[in-house]
Image 1 (cartoon, one colour):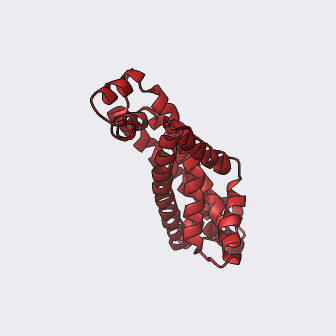
Image 2 (image 1 turned 180 degrees about the vertical axis):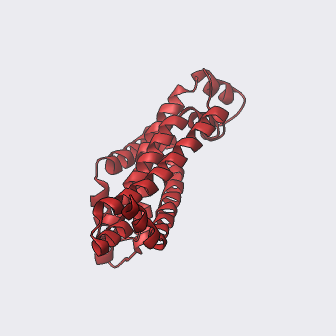
Image 3 (image 1 turned 90 degrees about the vertical axis):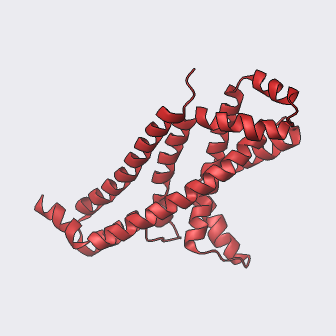
Length: 220
């Protein structure tokens, strides 16, 4: 037990730096996922078949490509084509766009859960189909799917560990943990504290989702 806490105290700065980097990765990726996912979810639920196809292509493309392969395409592939992104930008972009495909499907299911009568009522009041979807349907849809969006957020936090373990080599919680473990040869103790860091993040996300669910969820 003493050795366990000694690992933490001797390497607290490295653990803290990795934890903060992971927080930044998750925050930026979450913002991208929600913005793009809401847009694609709206396209998936739009009355236009052309817009539906665009949304479907996006969802099927990102949902069926492993995140690690996507990282190689964006970071290494674009660099070979002359567009070099920083590791942080490439990582958050990949994680955000990847998660957005799942967010879009959750929001689409929420849109279909909104009663059709609300569509008809809005159209009868003079709203266009786009305004109806944007101002009336999507806000209700997001409130309906708060629990599944919470699950996707937790999955995204865990998926962020791939960024540090890939060719991006971002100094997140996992990569810093690996470096510490390689230096002190205390792998079990070191990765225990890395796991605690991820538990703190997922636990905070769980609490936030439960608070939002109590305040915003639509009771049926």
